[in-house]
Structure formats: structure tokens, C-alpha cells
Length: 56
Image (cartoon, rainbow, N blue to C red; front, top):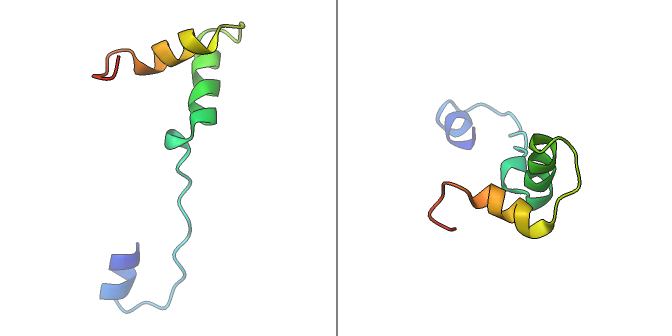
């Protein structure tokens, strides 16, 4: 947005972008929802988050 507004010489304020996909709390809530809102351990949650990545 900053680049486009600058190139077009628009005097508009750039709205902040919510980066929830990088927030651990949002990711943990997503995993909990995927698991049917049942209680699971943090280790299992992190394992689910890292499944099919090069980090596990």
C-alpha cells in the first residue's frame, strides 16, 4: 500500500495489517478449534502446528 500510494502520489493513510497468522495465540486457538475444542497438551498442539513442515 505504501508503494502504490507513493507512486500515485495519493495522500492517504496506510491502514495497519493484522498479522494474526504469525501470532502464536491465534495459531494455538486454531489448533484447539481443529481438535474439537477438547483439552490437549501444549506439546501436542505444537506438534500439530509443525506437522508437514521442515521444523518437526
